[in-house]
Amino acid sequence: MNNLLITGAHHDERMKYATSLAMNLLCQFASGCGNCFGCLRVISHTHPNLVIIEPEDSDTNDIKIEAVRRLIEESHKTNFEAGKAIFIITHMHQITKAAANALLKSLEESRESKIFLALAPSKTAVLATIASRLISVIIKPTPTSDEYYDEKIVEKIYSITTTSPSLRYSFCEQFPSTRPELIQNFQNLLETCHELLRAYYKQNTSLHTQALEPLVSLKLSEALHQAVNMLNKNANPRLITENLLLSEWPYACL
Image 1 (cartoon, rainbow, N blue to C red):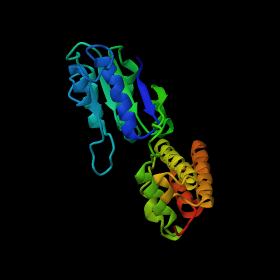
Image 2: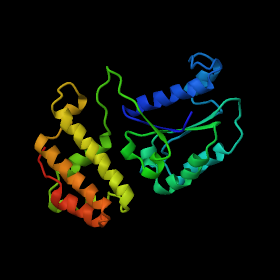
Image 3: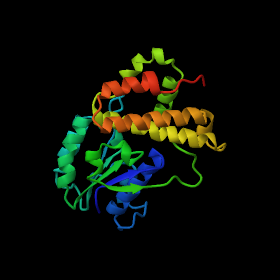
Image 4: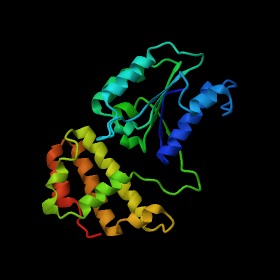
């Protein structure tokens, strides 16, 4: 089994999928039965061959280099029990650049007995250097589930949209200063903007009540797309951010 990037659906469903894979690999009957001692320890996150890395910083929700160093240390150990060692990174899209750089070598040198499962909303939300070293698996929401979205990104879109352009300077400081991270940030906003637009026409989704007017969504989508294109042409990240927020980002009283 290869190292995987699991995207799509909601975080809970991505985690359920990763847990299911771990159960299949560590099940005493090699079937992911869900009832044996191996499966029960995977479900309870107490299996010695299972390492889960989550954001620890309550302020930024980032996965920082200290957490990755612990993962690397564990990955170099001999498995405590027979079977594969499985490392689940729950929010790969929230890994810092320094932590990502530290992780790259482990991904490249991972042996057959070591499996990395990275979770993220989408492939574009993950740093390209990481995504390129993982096999992408996209899962779909269960038919009965509602649409899922990142509430923090929606809140950010609403906060900026409802603030007069002349008062948006403080928002500039909330965006990354480096080009790769800023591109990723804008792409996350763009994807959420598209979800808000789709939700406008879907009465049966929880996101419908927060949906943007179509013209606002379209204008914002166009502005974000243009900003990403400019960054890919090596434009100055700070100038692009200021131009987006103070000039191109639409203003609306929602």
